[in-house]
Length: 305
Image 1 (tube, rainbow, N blue to C red):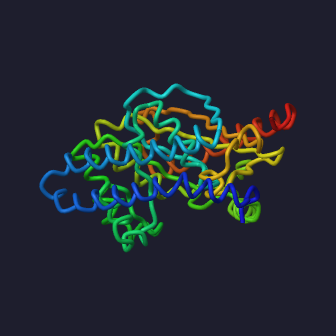
Image 2: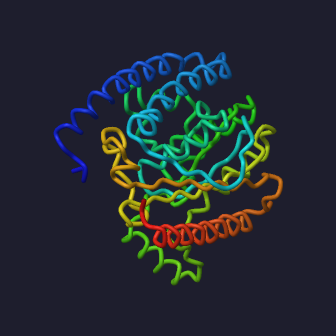
Image 3: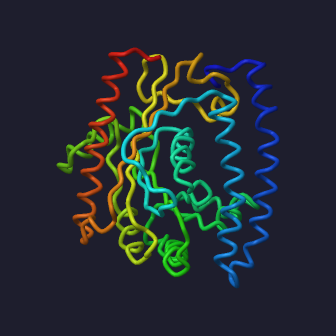
């Protein structure tokens, strides 16, 4: 149950989210109906579904930031407006999506965000079909099984030059203390560097994505996002999904801090070989861990507010 739960917050959350959920269902139905047309007019379907997605994601972003008072701190490199990119980020909680979308709104790319999603969602009527029609990669995390699905997504981006932010949580699971301890043991056993405040990243998906999308002329960069949270002095403590939709004054009253740090790397500067790409991602995670540690120390020194 939510730590901030009360009858009134639950009621407030329902009043805020039910209209959005009904609109989401309508949009999923519309996008699903577009799916057969993708065979004949793939770019039109992609652009239309992106416009519809923009309205859905703008609405939920306004709930989080405007109605529920989440203040998102943004730092790092300035991201060019309208630039397509491959994006890697650490994964802490549901709220990660809001932080990434805050940057996407600034860059004019919110409607073009595409996340790696679980393949099981394909079986969900309308929601899964809508995600599939939009060009979301629907994967099982078993890269040999996912080859056909990735070819579908990558061919659209390459052949039709779809504008996109292709977003991957490279740790493949959310950060927890227990998983961090498991990551430490694995890194020690395999002689890998253990990033601070992070799980060791899985590299196969990143390598596959970069090697395929080098051929896409509109993909100019890789963005590395570091995501940090704090609540009442507890680092990497994020609100649960329902709290992000129902609880007011998240930053002021409940003392949540939300921070996303962006780094931009031109795609042409990345290594060419698979082995060196794996090392490149590993090094980004080490640097990201150091940044998170510095934020942790700064927040501890200045207090949680």
